[in-house]
Image (cartoon, rainbow, N blue to C red; front, side, top):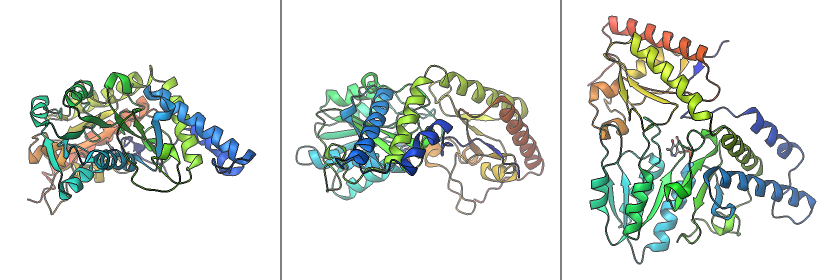
Length: 387
Ligand SMILES: Cc1ncc(COP(=O)(O)O)c(C=O)c1O
């Protein structure tokens, strides 16, 4: 069976062959517990140390500032609840943006339930956080500002360095969820000025089930779980050694390819966009035209439901809808709604995300299939909308 062209790299990436090769010995022979003092343990410990160094180097951090976690969701929870717990006697206000991933939004809302003040700052039509509103939202008791680096649905990149300056001027910490940007664009914690940063292995060719939290040295944070003193005391539990080795190798590869990856991704993404614009009259781009991940193309197909379109094209293209439109409930993506995009346009949205294994042939095939299906659906006058 021929599989459809994979254009859903923002959901997850395949594991790079180099990553699989690096992991294999840790599944087969190097099984030691990194905390054990014998040779088996020392081998594992050394490999984890190397992996930590690669992750740190990728984002311009110090090795001691990297804590491995089970996923980006866990890293976000650790950042938000960990800082909140450390600062709650002095500061009880948190600021976030309207288009965060649930892995950030839900912890913030949980804090609100627990008596914290939470300000959700709006974004503009391109998905960029309103810096004026963010500045006005900051208070003397703001503990943390958490704004994502790149949005998962539309790819818009936020002005994190400016936001960090604003937060720091009021004595607040800055966390960014960089799960989507790491490996796609250069990410440097110094240049961004962040105190905490989340990354996810499976978004840049490592395996699922591993992430990391960067915590600038000296940042007030307490662990969410208690146990032994793994990961600098921030995340107890015997390390997932194979996954961490994979994350280290993925970070090494990402750094090695840092100068070529964004250009390669952009070439494929822009070709896809160009072909779709030529074939679909009225196609609309969602997200910032320039300040956007180089691999992400969120477009609204006029007159059809994005979900139905992807269903019709599923033998040729595997992608996701930008809108979480459930026919029957009539709801659309919170991200697109937050950007002020109309219901109809949000319903037609599709998120196409390319990766390092996407080539020009894939793009042409996918574009032809999408255009063909759109024409058929549009001609049939099928909106797929239930209002
Ligand atoms: C921006 C962002 N943050 C967090 C996550 C959560 O990642 P994970 O499911 O690996 O915890 C995702 C995954 O889609 C994401 O896109």
